[in-house]
Length: 115
Image (tube, rainbow, N blue to C red; front, side, top):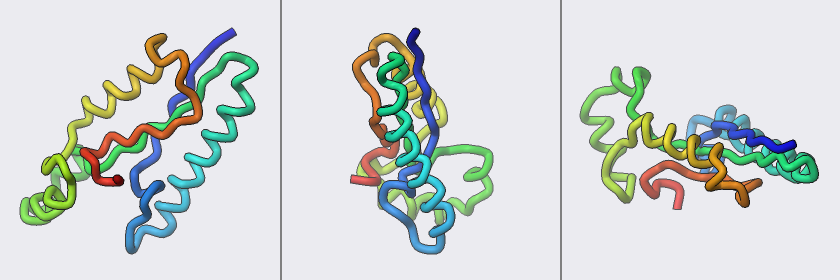
């Protein structure tokens, strides 16, 4: 047996965010759940990891004013909003055999926002 579970959380679950306590709690809870599950399933050779996206360009962010997006970009060390494909690449890596010795980890795909 072997397998890989990748849960999608958020950097807000790592660093918190004003006005989003319920969202932050749910995303932090998912991180704790995933780490516990990684310990429980390791004996079955099942890896469990979390991808925590930062500010990512999606249909939801498309409706935000450009000035707000520019302001948010200044808070990201790489100075840009990420793409959904960048999150997908991280998930694909964690699901692959190249990540066969990685479990119980949180991979922030956030341009450095949560560091």
